[in-house]
Amino acid sequence: MRKILLILLALLLTSCGAPATQIAERAADSSAPAELSPEVLASPTLPQPTPTVVEPSVVPSPSSTSGPTATETSLPPLELPTPLANSPALLAWDGEPTYLGDSKPGFFFRVKYDPEIWALTTDSYGFPAIGHRGIEYCVISTATGRGLPSNMNVDHDVRKLGTMEFEISTAYLNGARRFVTYLGGDANIYTGFEVTFKEEADLCIQEAEVVLATLASVQTSQATPIP
Image 1 (spheres, one colour):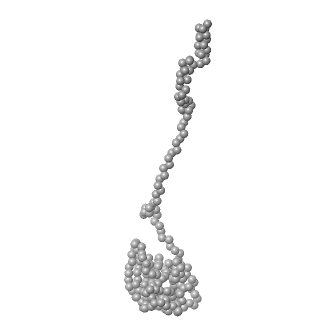
Image 2 (cartoon, rainbow, N blue to C red; image 1 turned 90 degrees about the vertical axis):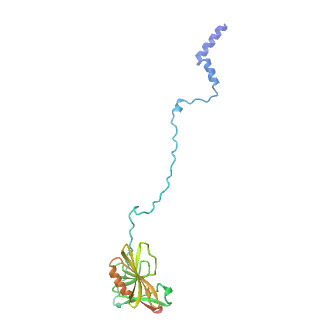
Image 3 (tube, rainbow, N blue to C red; image 1 turned 30 degrees about the vertical axis):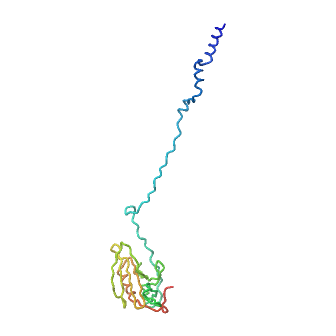
């Protein structure tokens, strides 16, 4: 009877699944970590973010080959008033001397100009000037000594215009005349003028010197400067 019971027990364990030895082994390995299923092992890994490399910004330095050369922008020519009917043959331009330290108090300069050729106005910067009616950009304005760019050179001369002696400086850029300054005066004033031009430089200078040759000093009470 006991033998029969043992045989039935063995049959029962066989029909229920794995052998008893495998059940014992699995029970012994219950403390080990569970193995991943094939589906988990085959799943793709998440993509790692690509590090961003920040390149330092580079500011291009100026060079002669970095682009087209900047061209000089011209100011518009001066707007000149219409000549007055029956105006005198010569009109006066009175103004404060540009070198007050070398001039006596109470005196202005005076030059005279033909109103058919010149017009009294203000220059592009709001200072008194006379502009030539027949030559655009031919202008006589007041001036003081100033420095020049290194790419300009100057020829100096001393000449008498009218009754006064002038120090005359002609400025050149790349061999081309750009402007001429005139410094002169009498016992009462010392003042400066600048003659600028673009075309017909010789004619502009010639006619400007006709005006500058009339330079004289006048008492402030007798002057009629531009407002």
